[in-house]
Length: 270
DNA sequence: GTCGATGTTAGCAC
DNA sequence: TGTGCTAACATCGA
Image (tube, rainbow, N blue to C red; front, side, top):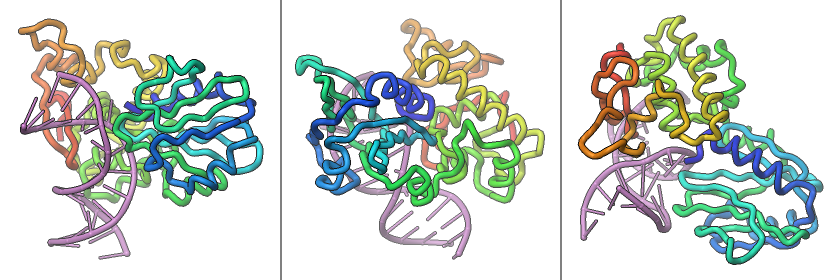
């Protein structure tokens, strides 16, 4: 689930639960998730505290009182959960940070594509990964400057974290739907007006998703997300949810840039 | 039992 | 050099 709105929701959750408490233990159930040497990580954490939270795109940063920054990336199925009793330990807990008050912050991730790492600073991590500006912070001008020379289809470019950080597969589809741009439209062929709509749609979709705490069923009716297959089917035999919320046309499911892509053939034209 | 999945990245072809 | 496609990662759940 973790695209920008989920990670922003996790950030707020961690800020409310896990700051300014002594870290007493690092529990690593599955070392494969560590992108940093285990001992170095333990040394950096034990006896320290998390003092702040930041987010760039899908990356969550937890600066430590002693300098370095813990970086969490949630892959496809990652999340965080604050708990105390062993009976409440979340399923798929892979790494857990224990605090002096007896609570623990679990990094859960069933598919284990997530990563826990350590960086010298947020800026160093951003530089090293080549992360572009956060999708909520990028300006219309920056976005257009980065894309208007590219001949690739617009959708995979939106997914490229070096262009702008935080947009994942469903958000890219939703943004393009709201902006009425076909996912395969070449970036270089988009008009200045289309870039304006694109930038605005990114803001609207992300803000809406964050406001709903990334709970999809609470999203507005006119969102394409309700047409995705994994949205709840209202009742057997009906497929209204697979039609465009704006014009009623059947939604196309195709592959663009190797990813499942939903779009309205009527509203999103070349 | 089979298939596809919200992310990232290495390897490869052009 | 830039670009873009595919497979692979590990696992779950439909």
